[in-house]
Amino acid sequence: MLIFSIWLFTVVASTYLFAKVSGSLSLVRPNMISIIYYYSFLISSYIGGLLIALGIDDYYMIKRMDHEEYRIIGFVLLTILMILFPLTQLVVGRILGFNASLEFDRYLHEPVRTSVDKNKRIFKLAFGALAAISVLAVAFTLLKTNTVPIFELLKGNTAELAKMRIEAARGFSGVSVYIRNIFGLALTPVLSIIAFVYATQSKGLYWKVVFFMLFVSSVLISIYDLAKSPIFFYLIMLLLAAVYTGRLKLNWRKISVYILAGSVLLVIMYVAIQGVTEVGSFLAYNSGPVGRIILAQISPFFLHLDTFSHSISLLEVKGLPSFIAKIFDVEQVRSARMVMENVFPENIDKGTGGVLNTIFLGEAFATFGYLGVIVAIIYIAIVIQLLYIVFLRLPKTPVVLALFIYFTINIPRTLVGGVSDFFFNPIWILLTVVLGGLFVLEGYFHIIWRFVMNKGKKRVKA
Image (cartoon, rainbow, N blue to C red; front, side):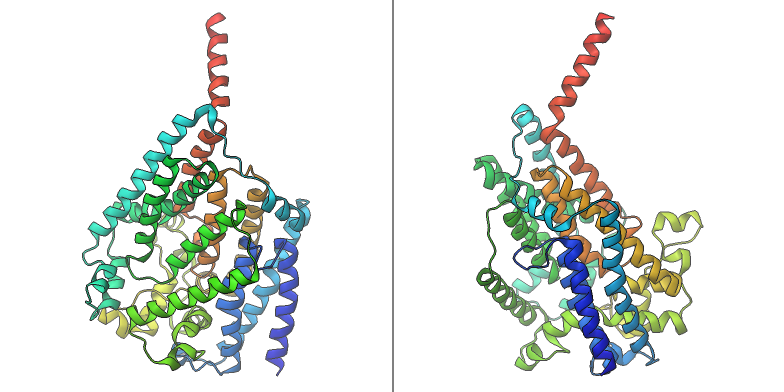
């Protein structure tokens, strides 16, 4: 009863704090912070954390945990996360004079700036070149994959889908990894959002055709390895684009329809991909889709605590981003893979074991222990709140809006993936640089060009 009381009080207090720092926790007014709260923290982490702390999870991963005390220790750390994270963001907002409610409301109703008349041809050429590169990167990914799981599923070859999924996800190395991850997985969906905004605002045939090509490519790259979450996140990106441009007004009836449609699609994917047919598997809280959502994501956190307290020593600098690890002449190691190797060695032997990703606290603990957990919470909360404030205050152009939506979806996903990506993420950096260049072409290239030309004329006269 005490654990549940603490959990309930924490949820109430955390909800209040997140509402203050986000501007809105309403499902009809979604934003980066509200998605983090609902998806990354409450649903994917804290609900399952309660079940594990109470010892009523009956989940196969937790049964592999050797030391039961980490049920309570993990729950305490999650409780600290739920309070300290939004509290840190609140402090950052107060320092910067950020009024979340007013600024988010203004952003939501502000029209999108789509005028690129001064340099329309240059912008279209640059965008078309990037779109072509992205489509080719998707084609390269499919051709480079020895056995494409989605094609095998459509052909009825379902015998070794689990192994094919692992091979499709991990069968890239060297330059091909960057081509797939940066230009295929990351850039293609973002470019499709930009094209979607221009297509809905300008009604131009060019943007409709480009959007269709990028949409098809984005769907293919999202489902080719039969991962279930990417396609849902991509569709949510499109939904956010429609909401932020004023093309869609959400209400509870529409949200109910979307949730129902998403649930049906999820069930179909579970039946087709994993062969789950028993009704009880879909209704049980510790198996099927429900178990995947509330327990599968958080259970590895408790395994991290157990593993790196007793079986494996802390990673220290080996758990930091690769470029930092190389400074100390060590190779980066991802804790999620090490936990999989330690807890489920039989899956590694069979070739079906990937990684046990979890809330970023897991990798933070594996790297620097309990101190690493507290530092990571404060650091990541500051970074995310600064990003949120910056995007709400930047000009609302299609390029900036697409980048904002990308981070709105990918930051919550990264929070349940690891901590090192928040110290150095080459994909985020490169994507920001590329779209920063598009942003200049979108609205400011003619100003820069005029400035350069005027400088040149003055030098000639001198």
